[in-house]
Length: 373
Image (cartoon, rainbow, N blue to C red):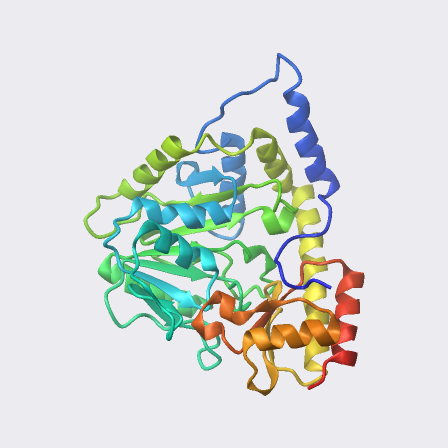
């Protein structure tokens, strides 16, 4: 019973499927066939995203939005427009793409096996003591990766926490790369869904988001990145970051699938948003079942309230891989060892709410009945 990978399992909803089918049908007729589109994305989809941001009180311009084939590629590629000499800070634990792409780019030193970290990166501890959101670095940083809701911990940054990072970044002209791929899962209206809800964020922040988890597009592939023209970083002019990212995309990317973009348009309609909300509610009920089930046998758990991931403390100070074996052997449930997300993930374990309800219930019952604590 797999509660490990964060992959959606519910089918694409009717109105979004209709949009995808419309995109396919258009390709079958001379009058409506489309080849290459704009590398920055369909102007209609960008306009719909402008409206989405407006609905949460954020003013974004269409020229600041770049449609892509998903948040993961953008999280990987965004670092390529910055100098290899830049100092990078990353949450620990964190989504491995942030670390690994900087390693591949040659921005780090050797891997320190004793520390479980790469030389040259600045790791920002996310622990129980700071509610799994890091403090502002005490040294000069150039690029700061933040993820909220966080993968893997499920922690969501407050407005005050984001404001601290924004003030820090503006003060030294650093750039925040903000991964908001799970923002639609934030159910608490007091918590920000976009970093641009915080004053000053457009001067220092790039935001990355995705249709994958809300519309079932993990295989369809569609996302977007916002690069405000107000950003000013060290040794750059106003609007330069937006221009460079545009050049990068036009050089390395032919644009997202026009079929997928029709599906994205449908997902942002009023009907599509209602269907997306139903998907989110389904997965969040799964998260509640997992969280409450684990708590009922006195396991210490975090997350799962505004994010589809549950971050569990391994019992009896077990190491992550040791608990992986124990959970598999005793309950036949698979999860993700916390060490896979960084050194400070040791002693923790991630479970995913992206599954069918009957499988989720069966897995939790097996844990409750068979895990020997």
